[in-house]
Image (cartoon, rainbow, N blue to C red):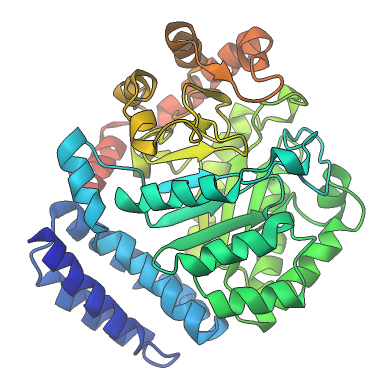
Length: 453
């Protein structure tokens, strides 16, 4: 029955999305959600639809919707909106089988780093010292997506290294799997007209450019000329109607810059639809804890993010301050990361594993004692503004490593405990102290309603 309902939902989404134009987006979205609400949807899907309406049918949401409709080529627009609506209102068939078998939802997305090679050497980055022979073989890349689809995963996030170093292979994989959606994080220096044309024809991928802020901030951490190349790449993708956004590694140095009106206005002018904000994490051989945003800066980001959402027609995701919307840490629960060696990590920053995709299945890894224990501890605190296993609850990370003894997957991985545990403990205590004033009964009740608790 659920599969039949999903089929009906998919067909309705496809029908209505094809009708959306610049002059009727609000009316079509309203009609479509009303029709879908008449279907016997599960509770979570009904909540998701309400949340979607709250995002897109607000004044800024409508402006954002118009930007999607006006700025993306027809194929990409159809597939982008189709993806957003599908994740809100329906599930792939394998979702329910997995849920029934293991009594918890399967993953929302799988992060894959098919290569750790990169053409840049950024300050504090862990993606270095890799060769082509270290890349993940295509057959295992395919294995991940095929097995992911069987459990209902429809979003695949491609990272690195620099993914576009593998463009011929990556292009073929995206082309083969047109029933799912891809998000590609890139430094932007390799994208050219030819790649843009390929992406335009594919339609089922969004590109996320990594920036540290304006020209000085970006080029000083990366290298001279990188900012200019990203601006050019954005113009190329905009010309071809390929959806794109921006990913900012937020440090103690650039926090105000990457959330400034000037920077966001530049991204809007270029055509960016999304901005991801990730805190700098002290992981990997070149880690530098002083680059982490301070607890006070994290609090400022929370308040600034609320202002941005009221004033800018761009979708922002603050990976830490938005944690209450996903019930805290999502490592091993809503996403995992698989590196170029095939190691199955709970998170892209969590460089430890007990299983490898070359020797096991996704299902076996996810239902291992290591992953089950990790999920059982989440959320680590009733205050969902302190979600992270590494920087907010290093004691949890320490206990997991001692109990399950996962192997390190990256040079210097043990430093996060052996070297940085004392400073992370002090950092986490300050974070908890600051965010305690943001977590009260009203806030808790707000997020309980969002999650249907």
